[in-house]
Each structure stands twice: as C-alpha cells, then as structure tokens.
Image (cartoon, rainbow, N blue to C red; front, side):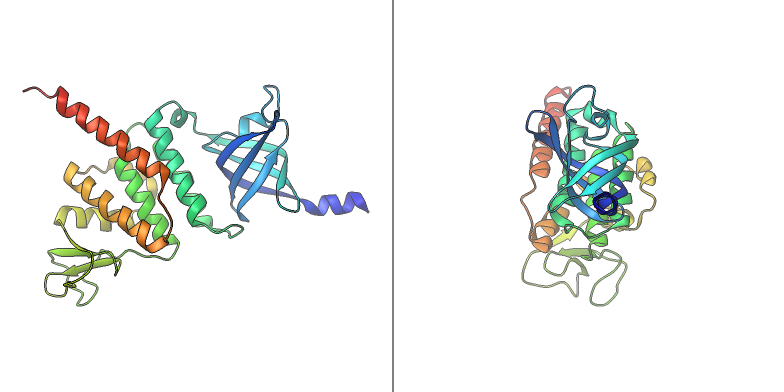
Length: 268
C-alpha cells in the first residue's frame, strides 16, 4: 500500500530551470517552470556532486524532462533527461544577465501552480534566440516583455488610437491607459509621452510577431530602442505592481557602459 501511495505522488513533467541555488553541501534547490503544473519548487538531491546523474539538468537555461516526487511543500527530483542546455548563454555576462532577467520576470509575474504553456514556449524560444549570436539582445528583451505582458492579460495596445481608432498618428503613449492615442484624443493629464512612428511600428510588430525566431532579422535604431525600453519598463512597474527588477537594472548599467565605451572610442 505504501508503495502504491508513493507511485501516486510521482509525476513526469517537462520543465525549464528558472533558478538553481545550493542547498546544504550536496543538494540544489530549484525553481521550475513546468508545462503541466506551472511554477513549482523542487530539491535535487546530491546534484552538487560531480558524478551526480542529476547535475547536468539543474543549471540555468536548461529544458529537461523531470520525474518528480510530490512532497508537502517541495517536490524531489528522482530522475531527469536533458532536452536542451543553452550553454552559450552562460559564457557571456550580458547574455547571462538577459537570460536571468527573463527568468526573473516569469518568477515574479506568474502565479505558483498555474499552467501557462504559451509562456513556457515563449521563454524557451527566447532562450533559443539568446543562444544565437545574431539576435539583437535589446529588441529580444522588449519582445519578451511585451509578449509576456500580453499573455498575462495586460494587453498593451499599439495598433490604433484607443479612443477613435485612428491608425495614422502621430501617437502618444499613455501609461495609465496602457495604449496609444492620437493627437486629438490624447489625455491632457497623467503620464503621456510622444512615441515616434518608427518606435510605434516596432512595438506593434513585436507584440504580434510569431514565432520568436523571426526576431533574429529585426534591427532598430538607438532612438527606437531607448523609447521601447522606457515605456515597457514603465508599463511593467505600473501595471504589474511588481518590481524593481534586478536583472533590468543591471542590464541598463551594462548597456550604458557599452554605449559610453563606443562613444569614447569613436574617432574624433
């Protein structure tokens, strides 16, 4: 009977490793984003040992098939089989930070135990793009933010004026309304910002882009990137009520340092 109860508590699931940290001298504590059961916590016994069969599947940016034993508060990893391990992401500090930022957003914004297959696919595809050296990291980050917000039900609106449906512009982005207005309809109070035609078109394209691999061909000007970053950050903070995001703050510092370096090295 006891063996039967244990079998009932075993389940197999496909999962992405959102977080992995040491637990004691031998184990690792994981935050997993599973296909069937959403976000859950798990212990990987002995995974810190070099010869552990679990060691290969408990690193960040890993997609694996897990056999888990359900406990009172945490699951225990009994077996796993790695599907994808995006090791290139771990080799570059900037790529690593972008990847961690994506994980942080999912950890903070997705409720525990709620399945979100579309968000699972979004994160996996964006890891895959990040593993590809041709992807523009800043555009990829904006794509991930906008798609995640939309899938969670926040639905930022760029297609046309929220009030009259005008599609020509110029447009103004309203933080409080979560969308754009034309010159005639724009609110005269609150946080309302002009959005250039190029940035408006890019935001609408990112929101409707599918699959994620198409982002490998997208490029934007520095002005468009700065505008996109500004209003997506404001939208995230105001509409989700969550933040600040450590990964985003660190990325902004890295990008600022990189741009300063390019400016200083430019021929006079």
